[in-house]
Structure formats: C-alpha cells, structure tokens
Image 1 (cartoon, one colour):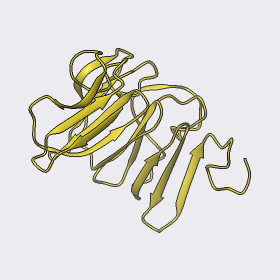
Image 2 (cartoon, rainbow, N blue to C red):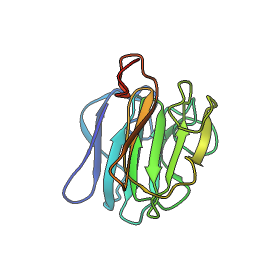
Image 3 (spheres, one colour):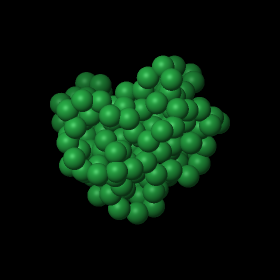
Image 4 (cartoon, helix red, strand yellow):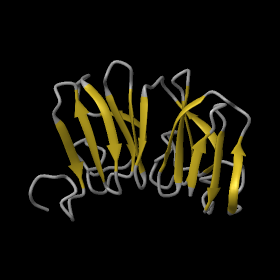
Length: 175
C-alpha cells in the first residue's frame, strides 16, 4: 500500500487494504488515492507492510492497520481500520515490517511491535503492544526501520543498528 500527504496537510492512501492499512474504515482494496479522514494537520507519514503511522503538527502519532504484533502501539493487538492515537507527544516516526519507532523531542528513542529478531532494541525478543524506551539515552536524532531491523543516529554522529542481519543489513561486516 501507499500513503502520501498533500500540500494542504491531508492524507491520501491506495493499494492493498486487507488489514485496514489504508485507514479508510474498511478493508476494501483501492486503486486510486482516497482521503483518510478530514484532518489537515499531518506532517509525517510512514507505511509498514500492513500498518501505517502518521504524525500531526501537535506531535501526536496516529496508527492503523494490522496489529497482530502490537505494531500500532495502542496497548493491544486489535486491528484498526481507521486512525487511532498512540499516547505521547513525539518528534519523528518510522515504520518497519511489523514494528514501529518514534523519537520524542528530548531525543529519547521508543519502539513497539514485532520483536522476533530483536528489532526493538530492548535486549529481548518479546513483542511490545505499547511504546518502550530503548536504553536511557536521550541523544538520538534520526531513526529508520526495515523489515526486521532498526537504525538510529545519535547526536555524536554514530550510527547504531540492531535486529535481523541475515543479509548484512546491519552493516557490521558479517551476517
């Protein structure tokens, strides 16, 4: 599926919608862009495999779609076909295959969702249904999420990677 926002701040989506990842309130596949709700305060969007994340100008994150691993961050595993709010105030977002990441304005890193390869960076393999802080550092400035791995850039310019490394995607020189 694909999601985009227009210059007026509205969100539009199209494509596969088997899990409600288009945010249109149903699971009907759509072949041309349709508007998601009527809000026009969106400033960031991310598409996972079957879930979507969006952030408003007030720092709120909204999520919808598949939630079998907690990737929506709503505290449960209930699939959502329309946007639902993730608690907290945020500065940036990233969506992987079935996990999500966000930074707070204080530079702290938070993750949730599927953790079968350690992609949440929590030192375990337990899925999380709500945002969990990664370490105690408040020095992260950028994040990215892949299929089963995550990347974070710290303020000192160092790049950190964790999770699945089957194809060397962590950049450590091995797999």
